[in-house]
Length: 170
Image (cartoon, rainbow, N blue to C red; front, top):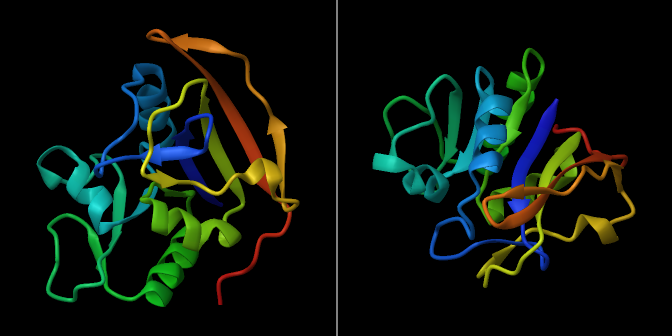
């Protein structure tokens, strides 16, 4: 399966200044436990936003950079979006592949994902970048609305969406 995993605020905001909007320990734990041992696919800025710009441990990291001179240690470096999609498709035959950002990667891969694991944050984070509002997309069905829980002092819900309009990667 190909799965997008992220959190959004009430306005479907996902980030600002190449960082997250909120510090959410429970959401981070969910992300770690869900993606551990699997493949993660991301854009270059997402990789650079990690501590030391290092890939996530215990995962296969696929990184798309538009600059062919940018190559990073410990990742599968890709410099063409179509090739990025092909590598994701091939990896998803044997394992779940998680799309982990950033905004452009989420938007460009959305039509190809089977599922979206969306942590909904009951707050507004002053975002600069946004995820498409899949509540208004007829192809996406929320199959699990989650229960509200407190993550620090912020209410969140772990939700799951299925993409009924998924397109195959050629």
